[in-house]
Length: 283
Ligand SMILES: Nc1ncnc2c1ncn2[C@@H]1O[C@H](COP(=O)(O)OP(=O)(O)OP(=O)(O)O)[C@@H](O)[C@H]1O
Figure 1 (cartoon, rainbow, N blue to C red):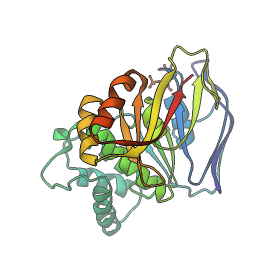
Figure 2 (figure 1 turned 180 degrees about the vertical axis):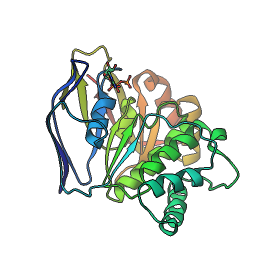
Figure 3 (figure 1 turned 90 degrees about the vertical axis):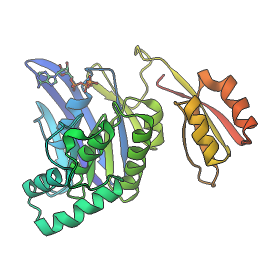
């Protein structure tokens, strides 16, 4: 796959304090890369470096071509007193798009994110989920080659998380590469990504054995069950995630703590298991 961007031994210091040390990362077309790490480990700093928003203290940031489009979604968006259309028009105009181009693109983005394009409702009255969708939409106003997302799911409820996840999967399928700091290991696994960790300023592909973060054990169940039943189960097991498996079954993940109650419930409600796999994350 075509390489889009490379960080080569990139380091970042703030006021003499080294936050990131010799970070090397290659992002290729079609990649979905998740960055994990404890609070304050330097995830946002790394995402901003990749996006070109802050300079490196040393090392290199190499772009595949100079007009590579990188969309950056900060960890939150303010509740502005304008509609999403007005805000996105404003952002698009800043990036040099014509009003005509913008009209079409803004409509497309509202469709993609299943957000109603209201000319009445101002962002100051948006829910967290609506605001976060708008936050990602502004980063996509020009179709990006690389979409950089800082904690896109933080503070969202289950339904909004599901919507956003669905939109991100579509964006990925349409060829945009994704680099995201995502806290929740199960969400990270839903994006079929490569996970990297930042620990003591260094980026590594291996998990963090010495971290304070606990090992996460969960199960992946492939089988058949009615979608309505999955909805019902979600009310009792809010941590479960689900999607279609490659061979057309449901692929449901559930946490270790729910093992003894979830499985009987799944079977009682008419579910049939094709396979069950124990998985571990974050160890
Ligand atoms: N502009 C800045 N000036 C000085 N120090 C900064 C600046 N931005 C970040 N830092 C410091 O760099 C370190 C890493 O911060 P960063 O926000 O990148 O971490 P993070 O992993 O994204 O954290 P969180 O998960 O809490 O969002 C922190 O110690 C922070 O205080």
